[in-house]
Image (cartoon, rainbow, N blue to C red; front, top):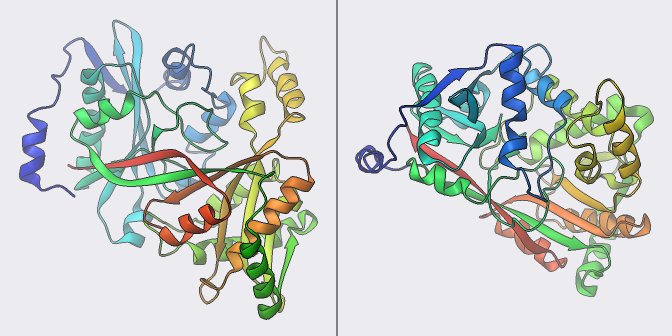
Length: 393
């Protein structure tokens, strides 16, 4: 974190607050609609923009429907100028994160703004005011609502659409955020990997030796035993990531909610569990990049009550040829023993067999050199970079 004196100096260089912009909390259904639909004007004409489904966004913001609100708090804000919505932001209190990480931070997320640093300042100041009232001493973001959701601001890799469950934003957002005193906390990487590129022979040979030596078996998840499989993966997930930067364990409700969403996209052949003597010790989850289909629906499943968007989505689903490797990890005691290479290889081989062209591995921490080198050894090329920012309050 930057020193307070340094930040005071930075604050003095911030853009002036615009007198014609009003920032207010979201209170009505009309406010929520304006919050969600602001993206259509911000990204108008951007061929790589993929809107969230409006139905999903409404549930995401609803304390009665999203499990984050069982323990966390969120305040959504809208910025308006002459009656027109020009920006939005969410201020987030996540007590589980602070308890697990031993910190005292709040978060910002869901940031969207016209290309005006003054409007951005008005949004950040309103969010900071809410977070300071909660007693937080610093703010990190963007996150929606934690590292278990969409994380980071895209700063490199604007030439392609975002993969499912990753962020996308205009290239000038970084300038808006940095003009308002935020500095880098951590960068995250996305990697591109083609299924047509065979892994290095040496990597494949070593992985097979490890498979035999350790007695590793890899199987697809059993969707007929879905609840039990979710419980197994949940235990492995919270164990495999517990020491990572920014990690916070998912609650039962959060994990079950995510599992239900992913079940609609999962192909069992690409959701793999590694076992040793029948004990689950690692897993890899790769899903079809549903953003290719969601983009066709343009965020809405119905128009004037007709399922036009849904029909477009279902038709486009049949044409998906890209994947996203979302999770790959091994539990304590089995790390650095080559199980990750086995899971990578089996995923790659199965993706090729199913006819997928390749896809994205995301995200990895910039300083997780072991994992990043492993991806490079498999032929992965860094394709996108995301940045998480921080600022004292």
